[in-house]
Every structure is written in C-alpha cells, then in structure tokens.
Length: 334
Image (cartoon, rainbow, N blue to C red):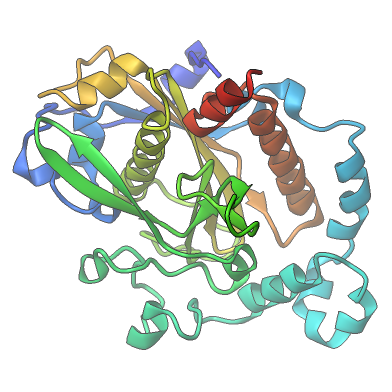
C-alpha cells in the first residue's frame, strides 16, 4: 500500500546521512554485511514499532474470521509456565495443531545455546555473543533462531541485488513463503523460487547483547541486512512483470522469541535510481517495522496469528503490490 509518514512518525525516524555513490567499491559486499554506508547510499529511513495498519491495510486484519476462530483458542492454550514444562505436558496437547511449535518454544525459552544441530553455527559452536551474520560466515547459510524456524522448513535462499552501473551482490534469507503450482508433466506440486514473504531468524541478542525482556537496541548492521533482503525481494518480484510497477516487500524476522514484520515499498522511480550512479535525497525509502510479538505470551501469539492471517489475506486478495501475484492475476484475467 502507498505510505506517507505522519508528522509524529517522521519525527521518530532513524536514518543515516551520507553520499549516495552506488558505484563505490565499499558497497560491493554481501547483503549480510550491509551497514550505515548502505543505509545512507540507499536513502533508507526506519520507522520502528508501528501498528499493523501502518504496514498493510487494516481491512485485511481478521475480525470474525473462520481460520482465526478455529486456531485462536489453540494457539493461546499454554501459558509461559506451561511452555517451560511442555515436554512433560505434551500429552495434554496431542490434538493441538501447534504442539510442535510449542515444543520448540520450550527449547527457545529454557536452553542457553542458540543453534540447530547440523547447521553451520553448530559446527563452529558460536559463543553467546557471536553474530549470526558475522564476516567470517559471509556467503554461508545463515543460522535460524534456535529450532523454531524448523517448523517453516527453512532453507537459505540467495537473491541478487543489482545497483549502480555494474554492481551485483547477493542477500541471503532463511527461506520464505512461495507460490505452489502443479507440474504439467509430472502432476506433482512444486513451489516457486521468488518469495512472497522472506524469513530471517536470529538469536535473541543478535548484533547487541540484551537480557531477557529487554528492548532490542537499534543496529545499523541489522537494518542494513533487512534493507538488502527487502530490496532483493522487490527486485526478484519486479522481474516477473513485463512492465515494472511499484513493489512491496515483506520480511518476517524472528529474534529469539520476538516476531516482527518488516515492510518496504519501492517505487518504480526508486528502483530505476538504484541502477544509476546515485539516489536523490527526496527518494526516501521507508522501512517499517511492526511492534514485536512475544511468542512466549498468549497475547503475543494471538497478535502474531492475527498479523499472519491479515498479511496472507492481503497478499491473496490481489491488492498487494507483489510482482509475482500481479503477474498471476494478470495471467488469469482478474
């Protein structure tokens, strides 16, 4: 959806000022290592802690919704204390569709080590203060936050980002949500390679160590990585169109047990400028983060469910500005 910040939002923006030389060799690094120079060069401004109706139209947030009504009692069932002892109480939740999710929440709450056995992070046994996107791990699959993302069957995906006159780098995500289709030859179901929503997961103290319950501090490195993944998403989707249009990009981030939705809208003018030598100061890119949803809490899980249903309804409606969906609706004549 089109977005303009209110005066109050504008006053709270976080941005970095500097030159926009898109041909600078300093910018030619993996999206996992984007920093304040990239934020300045790409004219990115952050608005954090926004309500959901500032990220996608409020009309898609569920009220009396069949799916919400079916799943809401189930996802709210355990308290935080129940989650801490979930393994011993698992039999009480045998018919709950979120049982596997609750088990992984228990692991996230009660264990101190933030890695998944078998991943790169496990192989190098990171310390509690190490970063999942360290320069030593550049261009390797990023490690999901503990074991919760395994429910989403994470698989690292690379997206190409072209900027300046001849620069191309990659941004890696922890997977995403993709369209599925039936293969006309085999009849089997396959999913595409262009994400409708990208996923990113990190340990609770990614980029800055923080105690449990403490607010996450701002980080140029974290916002830089989000910028790279959102831009890569938008570029992949606009390539699905015969004629380019404005593009929305969506990123679900999981830091420990905090879930956020991150959104940016890229105008065709902005995307054209990205392929030139610089981006004018008036072509500001607003990166919008939602309020955090604490998955340990019943209220947080309910909020996350409402957000997910609303976002999916927005995307499937055809009103969203996502190239792959625009191409699909155009092909079907809708």
